[in-house]
Length: 100
Image (cartoon, rainbow, N blue to C red; front, side, top):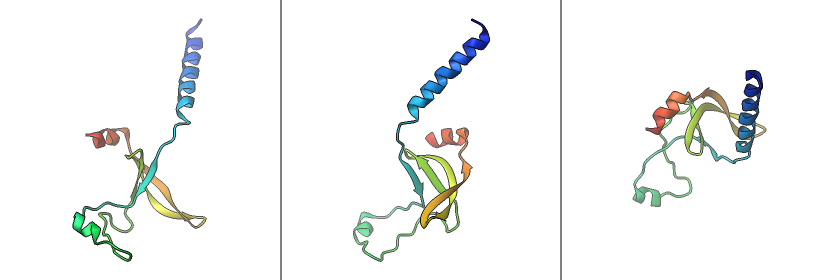
């Protein structure tokens, strides 16, 4: 068996392994912003209350997969539903830095 044959076998094996992972569900979240409030303030919230978030209007939003940052983007509306247009994919180095 030549090297070319071995390479194609390893590619098929890798593709089969990837296919196995493609059916695993992920929780995908778009984060508009965060805040910290006291429990007392949380308990006093009611209909019409306003909670101020850390991000500014027009700032990019974070796209998380299983609570890990993977991309950033901007809000768009598609068929009357909020959506996210991805403007930046988080680099592998940045993902590693976020783990620390």
